[in-house]
Image (cartoon, rainbow, N blue to C red):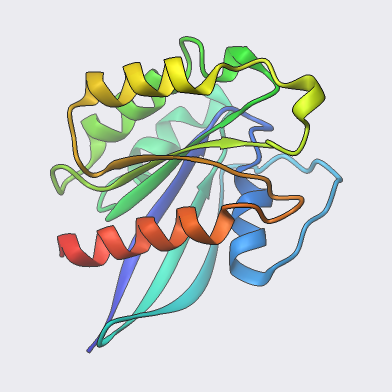
Amino acid sequence: MSFSIKLGLLGDPAAGKTSLGRKYVDDTFTEEYLPTIGLDVYFKEYKFRNYTCNCAFWDMSGYAAFANLRLQYLKGMNGAAVLFDMNRAFTIDGNILPWIVELIEMQIQENIPLAIIGNKNDLEAFKQINETDIIDKLVKQLKSNKIKYFSTSALTGQNVDEAFNWLIEQAILSI
């Protein structure tokens, strides 16, 4: 059986959404920062059990100026990844929950799978986030078994496949 799913990538500017998505889709990484203007969409075929799934990754700009567009893009998501930069505490402190609330308010399908991703874990010397405390509180607050936290690096590829594979498989099982 073959079908398509729509997955969103959300988070503050420079959290690494594009880098992480590109690492997963085509195994590339660039250190040059090019902000996403509005939206970028890329695709990957994924095989799970007896399914062939065409995954569309909707990489949305994190800038406030694009909030109205994001509201349209979020409709019909089958799953989402909400990213924060582990080296910039403000990207999670007070920022990650509004991203999740925005997603929940705009989705059509209830209780979609959500991967919360702390990115740039390769920059250990600059790390500003105590992941365990923050993520435990967040997951408990959201009260869903379709939420999982991943610590990733788009540079090294650490946990990138694990995060996106989990998200895709959960989305498939939810259809």
